[in-house]
Image (cartoon, rainbow, N blue to C red):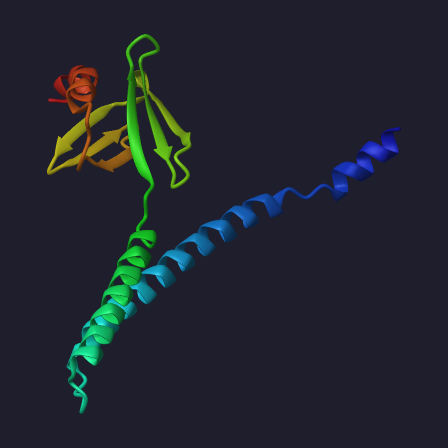
Length: 168
């Protein structure tokens, strides 16, 4: 029985899991870039349809050009929207446990806990120029996050205020 477990341990290679996650991340970046490229190309082509001179400028040709350019422009706009990165970072303040939780909501809408930061782990907090920076007691960067559209900024500032006053 020992030989089987030793053989399993020696053949078990879990490094492929990280490689698969890296491949998924790379494929996501590549697909976003392709969507954005083709969307911009379709939108530029829709505008370019009107720049090409034509011998036939009757009403039927103008209608065909209009319909075709609207379809191309609409499809390009849809592809550009699909090419956007829709991951959103949320910050939850838990005063009972004395911690901040970073939650990343992906394109699929599922919330994933990415980081838990205890208040006691934060040595210095800085909120300047629309960026929240948390530094631990060893002066190592714990978190640097842009605060563009944070809904609970007042709660976060209230939770971090003692640390900010302590550092000042």
